[in-house]
Length: 285
Image (cartoon, rainbow, N blue to C red; front, side, top):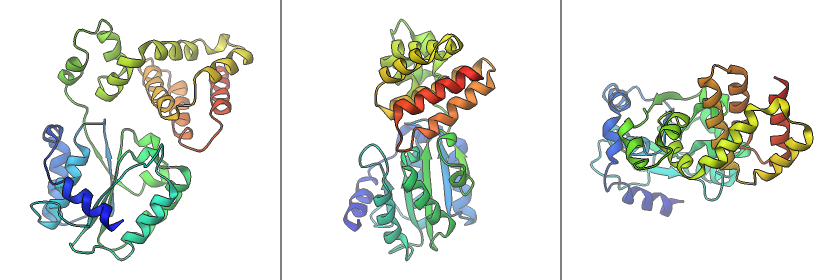
């Protein structure tokens, strides 16, 4: 892990994402923490992809340790090696941070796409948050705090990163005949807009099925759940978008259920069975 940390640190000193410069509120909060020295053990960076969360974390680390560049093993970006962040990664991380910083005043760990923590990894990571080593700061990046266990969220200081300006979405959807519909469905979030640009027809079908769920029998539900496939990350994004769709129509129960199952999909589950149960519960609301 030491070699991986060193490589990460060296590469990440190269520059700052332009999106970070748009996050004046978040950056101001982080600068205030550096200035006062009141550093929490864990922060939750919440916001869409490409909104400057990682760039802000790097600047925060440099500020805490008064460094010009990240050339140290005390900065690490943890990401999923496959489809999820595995418990083995958290065990290795625990071993690395247990004695605190190696070279600097603070050791900072950035967990990218923290919603990808497997259930076992999330439980192991929670123990780290409950008994954090001195001088170790954790930053969890996520698109939605609802996608993380409440026990983890409650132990972090949340910092919101705003969605990028509408111009970013308009640029992404330039000359797209469905731009207006995609902008509305994505709530102006660029990462969802990019997904819908490629998946609009399938998502329309998904919304239509959920909207008309009371007219569906079990055979239809089972058949559609089977047809949805095995891509859990895609379906999780569909459910987050579906929650936004229902929330915009003031259908709070359906929105809440969609968010609940977006979290459930993070687990090692029978995907078809889980979707069947979700649709049946939607039908009963």
